Image (cartoon, rainbow, N blue to C red):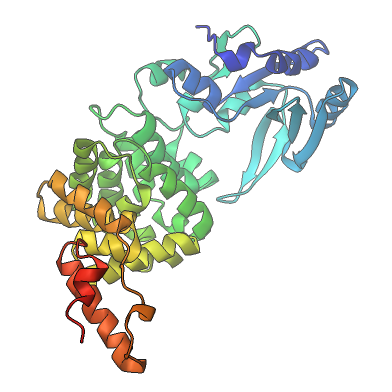
Length: 384
């Protein structure tokens, strides 16, 4: 099989591979860029695997006038910058010893060694400068069938890096065949290695969960996470009960996938600490819970906290109740988010201190009750 992607035909890509192969080394694009090119999916990162050692890569590239950065040289990775493009170039490696997230590696001249240390068969695909696919572990049939399988022994692959538990669900949501379900061997190995999740940093967990929640149809992946015990391990108290209805509502209303709203419908304890949310993300979570506790309507929540919170409230509530969202509610949320209370303190002559604050709140309540339609004149007309 041959790929003909624009990024592969690009002069910088050809120059990079050519610089290595003309010196007698093997060089291939590998992993996500090859996988996504074969699936006709967008490609972001360009990773290269080569039989050249890191010092050889540096010397060859610098002799060509290309800039190099030793971003992970102890593990065999050199970043090569050619014009405006960036490439991660890594020497063929094989694992000598692993520690659940770090590994002692030895460089290898065998592409099969390099393929065996990767996570899934669909990610162990390589492509040369001519676009011809090299498939050392017969992963191409799995990719074509959208069948997600760990390379060789699932338990061993997970023990090499426990983040692969979450990566399994993320890759299934993005690339797996939903109609065929998940691999029983993989799920069994995941269930046997739940303790390994405790060894991962919250930042690494949070990054994976974000990517998983952004998938178009992550419902089956999350259901499997709940069944295997993974979900409770990373988000105590979370449940998928309303997750699928929320995703369905998003599709029904033509709304883009919102990973944070999907996180809200899962629930769970201490989301900020569990996933290392940013301050802005934690603020949105707090505002949603505040609106919920105060029993605000979605349009009022949008006025108080912004359109996102109004949508969060409307969709999560509807998903929890198994009810559709009236399109009119969406229009009201937009109206609430755009509304600006027309009365200011300077408009209330004769009021000071607590009396001034009470009167402003009273008028604001009346204005909200009017559906944000009362004018300043209307609101002030009853004042003596």
